[in-house]
Length: 394
Image 1: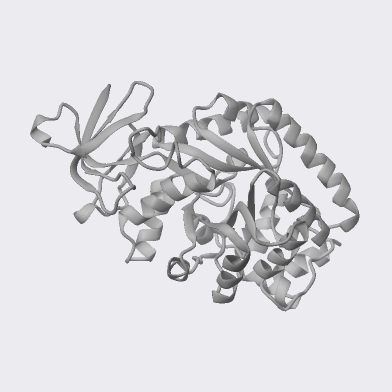
Image 2 (image 1 turned 180 degrees about the vertical axis):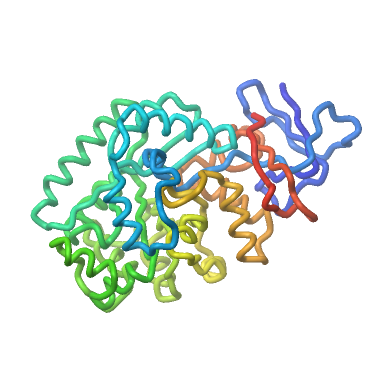
């Protein structure tokens, strides 16, 4: 049995933190007990906070080879141009080495589970060997309606490969602007069979322009490339997605559906989501949003509507790091009302719930095996600072 203690213990099954708290766990990491302690009598007492292992709810770990290759602040149209120019510019062995490195970095910093996007099988063997739990979302693209069948054949073959590695895998749509209406519905229907879906939604105003009015930089890029463009609906891209989703099967949706980014969501969108989804989640990736177009989602509106928020890092093509604490500090810095226990609930417990792993992960409760993580260099009243960092203890 191991016992560790710290100035703060965030169990996340209760509000706030235990001041001068301890966690006891079995050799396999199962939490046995938590409670208050006398620091002077503890063999191991840390300055900082003990928290459950993080759940990175949105990552593209296979793009780790793109670290530090991208210009910032280009907007989504410029970012897509860079992706197209820089994809597959390194040999496979270097890609694999980068994936392995960043998986180890995330684990050592305390990420116990991840919802990861894959377009190929580069990461599968590494995920299989990792102690981190992953659900792999097999993302598809295809703007031409006539290609829908071939694209679906391809993603089902990729799922068979993931299955052969023993990975939990889900076919999933990328975004409304990279897919024909037929493909959005077809791959959503396939993904919903697994009980999960992840969808890049309302990441940028350029996306909204494209769907609402048939204009803007992303629209012009698609037209210039000779690609089909999504239908102009006069409504938000989120409402367009919900319409396509209901072609997969009628509402309500009991599956766990993750809307990634939602920088442009408004009350109309919130109401529509709550009307048709029984388990909607939103993945916040604030550092990525700032990297690409210097904007952040309406977190206050999301909180007031009671939608379950999670936290992701996105990829190293649109971020300087895959650091969950850095994401939380970004949110705290821009939304001063946020306290650490709420941020940790998003980054641990809500993410575990999205993945259907809340019985094992997400909180420091007896019987669970979430991992134990130390966050160091906290400021006054236990708030995060620019120096705050995390490391795995268990």
